[in-house]
Image 1 (tube, helix red, strand yellow):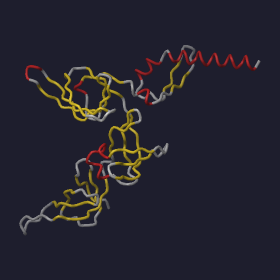
Image 2 (image 1 turned 180 degrees about the horizontal axis):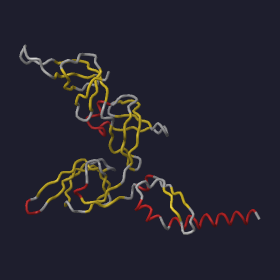
Image 3 (image 1 turned 90 degrees about the vertical axis):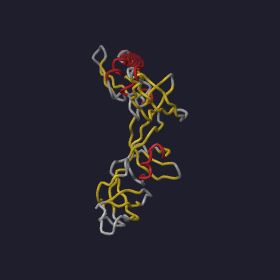
Image 4 (image 1 turned 180 degrees about the vertical axis):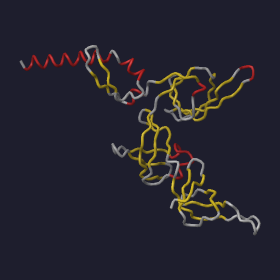
Length: 247
């Protein structure tokens, strides 16, 4: 009896999954979050589907080249590229085009390609994931996922010039494709300490509104003239702009 009941339950489970699996194409095309989706089969049974992120990343969406932006990931002739720069250009009578600077995700090589503005481009989905910076060493940042405790070694160049602001304990966001980091970003408001002040050399009676200040991370920024050495300030790491006193 137990064996018969077990076989019966197994058959029902297989039938239920089979019914749900036939609905996968529609589900995948109509849900933004593919990692956890509930669908209903013909018997009214609910099926909770969980897909590995690496699987869903191979599914993209076709868009016009004019809609592609830096940071996007696209597929071209079987290769996966990260868009570094996308510029709209006019070719006279030849019409408009998009000039794109791309980086091959697999090899790291950079290429320059042209697309018609209305040309269809396959965008690939990527994952934005939060990490905590443990420390930096040479040209590498060591980060950890506070939930899974997964650790990654990330080239500092993925953060661009803002990498100079990376500090221990800072929350950063990595854009991942198939588990590999493509680029990184950090808070737009970072606390730094003024290490040196470079006073203006203009006329003795003129008090400058701003002065150059060397921060504890080695970056030089323009700050109000009333600030002094040792003060902590907020800076936008994207453009090194002064945002205000930290205290």
